Amino acid sequence: MHTTIFALLAVGAGTCIALQASANGKFRQNLGDNPLFAAFFSICGTILTASVAMLILRPQVPDMATLRETPWWNWIGGPLGALIVLAGASLTRELGAALFISLVVGGQLLCSLLLDHFGLMGLQEQPITLGRALGAALVVAGVLCVKYL
Image 1 (cartoon, helix red, strand yellow):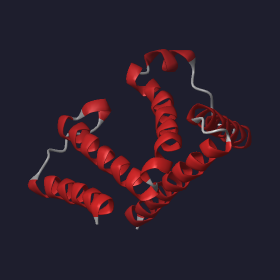
Image 2 (cartoon, one colour; image 1 turned 90 degrees about the vertical axis):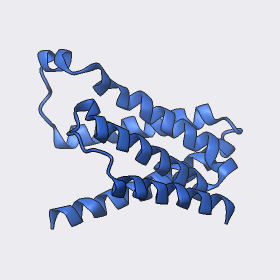
Image 3 (cartoon, helix red, strand yellow; image 1 turned 180 degrees about the vertical axis):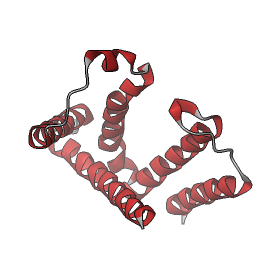
């Protein structure tokens, strides 16, 4: 039951990514065709949303020792998120929402397979099996279908 709920939440997150990319692509156009401003103002919305959530939920603040002991790669999520927002603002209009998102999903899957296989970034090792490789190949085939069919 939990897996189904988590899967539905992941589908919802994917829906948000597609909507975000499309909104940021149009935002770019409305702001004088400048993807940097579209990304900047979109990220301002992210900061505002996170700030409101923090004020409402009031989570316990981690102590300084915990922050200092956090691995360096834990801190790259924000800059990588900004690059994703900028990519959506820059590329969605040129590629279309479906091709942009299918390429993003393909890149996510291929990178995720390597992260799992080598147990990188604190993940449990999960070797690339024939089934996983076939699944990735089908996603790549899906990208090609979106692009060319």
